[in-house]
Image (cartoon, rainbow, N blue to C red; front, side):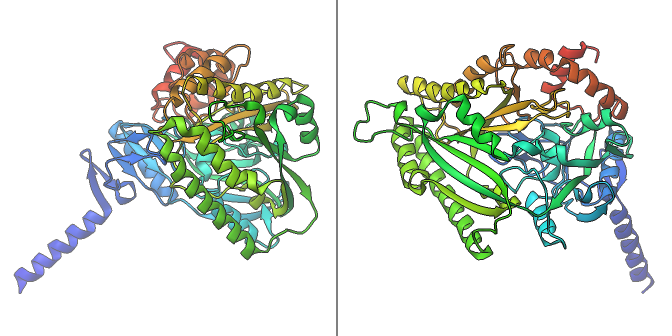
Length: 522
């Protein structure tokens, strides 16, 4: 009996010890810093494949602190990931990868300055944030959101993501404060009241300051937007004054071009861009009631989702058969967007801003740049026409690099140093040119590299969207070192303060950009 009791006692002690500490790289740490056991991580479309030394999925603030302590003990660097919609290498690491998707707590609070604010942990999907705000008494909403509601708070903030609402800027412009676990293991709060310069660096930080724990946004009472979709003959409508006129009466606009939508299938040998239509979406704030009851809206979004899946499965046929692109894209247009014609409806603000449901099974290549809008909007009209003609020029060579969408959004400038829309002029506007094509479409790389040669020049001074494809563009590193030299100098002062030993600076592309701007010893 004594032997049995002794064995049970040893077993209990061993179990308790195991629950308190585990061995990682020969170092004892508390369980909250225990890796998941996963050995690889892939982003949403499979373009980024990571094999770090350890993967963590924290669910509390203490977890984050302990992971940082562990990294410090073991001489490891850290990169973070959320939903995985970034297709650049920002999350790539061979050391510690921290997945924040289990940090999803949301709290709403009254604020003497802003009326209401909402605090969301790093891994909160925008869909959950919207839901909490909508169910609050009174109902509330963010004033700037991405199109997809599946994105996570920290990812949206870290890369400077945006929607289509011109007046509210990038989503980071709605931030009141944020908490980041820095390399010391401390939780540092960044806000305009504490230090405006540091705050403007932190608002788009690329994960270089530490692990974002939570973000507090200013919010508004729920309001409605009238969302209108109008089709115009592209050749006639794409004029600077037309773009300027519609923006002046809208809260936001988005201009879409669906490739070869005017293609005449009865005469396939003569693609003609003059037959194409342009699709213009705009939003206007209104006191009108919503058009659809919740059940009808849910059904509409379900139908949209099924349409996206069907379109994607059809477009995948083009990967081995690119010459069929005009025929297929025109058929999809005629049966969906073209068939719908001009439409208008009133929606709650988040429903209007998230006008396309997030469908994770549809995989695309993504490329986006931002460039400053000329006062007369002439360069916006020029670039819309240029993209259309460039696709026809490639088609003449039997190449069809874009089979899904090209869109253009106009966003106001920001003080966030690393945003594509950063500008000292608060009245400046930026055009965000976005291209999407089915993943692995032939000629895609060739096409975006040719665009890089156009836009990443002194003439355009364009900046890439950090979460989309940019690293493969020839000459992009020295270009960004020069184009971002002054913002990098300001940013680096803050980064070095909170991460002097570069625990979070584990990204070769960013290291090279910074070195080019600051010198090799930076």
